[in-house]
Length: 357
Ligand code: GTQ
Ligand code: FE2
Image (cartoon, rainbow, N blue to C red):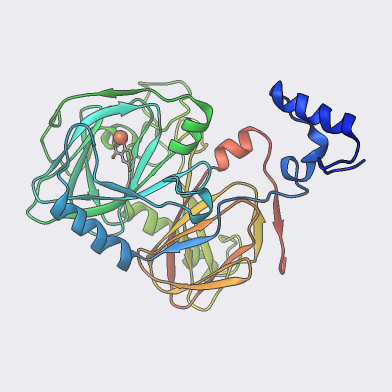
């Protein structure tokens, strides 16, 4: 079968013209693009340095007010392969958000699921359905779809963090709704611990109120103290000769929904990885896209044939089926989020370990 549309035969040429006029499109001229042998993402592997992002966010803080309409002083990572769209990957939004001293980002809600991850600083409370949640270094804070949320900075110093949302996926599937809420935040109190944590954040214990499976976790904050302890103990147990890590020197946890044991949200997976200095992960490919933010330490990301040095705060995008591995120079902590729940739910998940075993 021929795969070009430039043909000698006038009748065939006429046929292609008539297809176009009727908004019809033959498969045989574009099979390779439509159905490649392996995923061929338009998104490219890319790294944003925190030392670039933070000063730009700071300048936005000086020049751009935060308020109703624009809603958030959030600056999205725009993958250079995605034609200028504000998307880190085809499914994931990642942004740096900056809130100056005493500033408030007004309440709203949307179908899009969101989280915040804090690489430095504190002093902002995100108020989720009226429940104030303190944001501090290392914490993962959740704003599930359709929960009202606003952020307010109680201090006289600015704070920045990263947002992860499923905005691209929701746009692609035309599934999004949005509503404005209160111009301020509905509860300005500043408790250390949110009500959601007081109810839900006791290891292995679930309250007998609110039974039933939920696709989104009822926990609004996963605290650094717990994440750090879990990773620390995995490596300590490995030292003591117990099987506690998936590969040598590599501790890893997934943030989960205590009502299902599954992912925190229907569209986003979040994990935290800790590598001992001098170790590396096995090179592999995975279906679906992932965004990493280095939390602590220095190392290298190998992405396809390229290698990039990374340090605290740097963000790394790994598109679908891109070969990747991490090499830790020092002890290396990295936060990761991905669209794996979508991929797995659709039974499209595949991985290939390309090195070692
Ligand atoms: O903080 O509510 O980066 O609604 C993008 C959309 C943050 C937020 C973003 C949002 C928010
Ligand atoms: Fe929002």
